[in-house]
Each structure stands twice: as structure tokens, then as C-alpha cells.
Image (tube, rainbow, N blue to C red; front, side, top):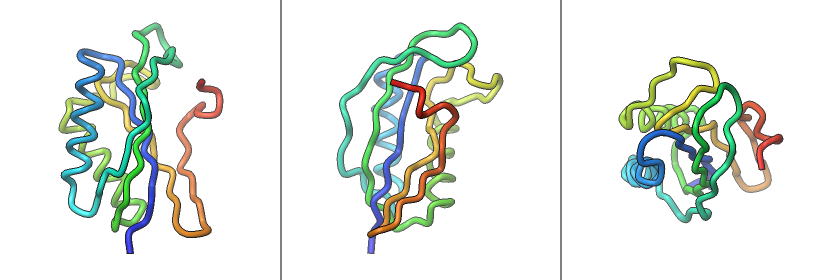
Length: 119
């Protein structure tokens, strides 16, 4: 039986909107992941060194993957879109914060740094 998970997406380099769209397409094409819906896209100020503003969205997925496998798949999508981890909180083509996982009555959050401080 699939489990519902929520993935936060963000990009602040290049064609930010296309990076988000490509991430959604690639995640939806991942075996064991079905993108159900997406939030609106929001522009947010970055945390960390001076850099461009982010475009952010959240997607809901149904998945048969275990949490760690979903994370590994999401990180693979980041890598395929050219993500380079050169600077902590630095700019990125696509940022895949860790998923929030929902299963029946249990919710497990794998936190992103300063998520609660973001608007």
C-alpha cells in the first residue's frame, strides 16, 4: 500500500521554474513514486550567504519506497539536474530538502535547516 509523503522543492539559479518542473517530472518518473499534486510556487529570500531569491514549492507523492530510498531517489534527481554542494546554504539549481513522511496515523519529519524560520 502506498504511503503519502511531502517533498519541498527549491531553486535559485538559472531557469528556476524549469528546474522545479524538471524535478517534478523526474520524481514522477521514478519507480515507486507517483506525484499527486503540487502547491503554488512561491519566491522566498535565501538563508546564508548573499545569493538570488528562491522559487519554492511542495509536492505530495504517493510512494511504495521506504523513507531512506525516497530520499536517495530525490538526491539522485538533484544530481541529475546539476546540483553541486560547494557551500553550506549556498545557491543551487535545485534544492531537495528532506521529505516529510506521512503514513496512516504516524508522521515522521526529516527536518531541513531553519525550515521553521522560512515564510
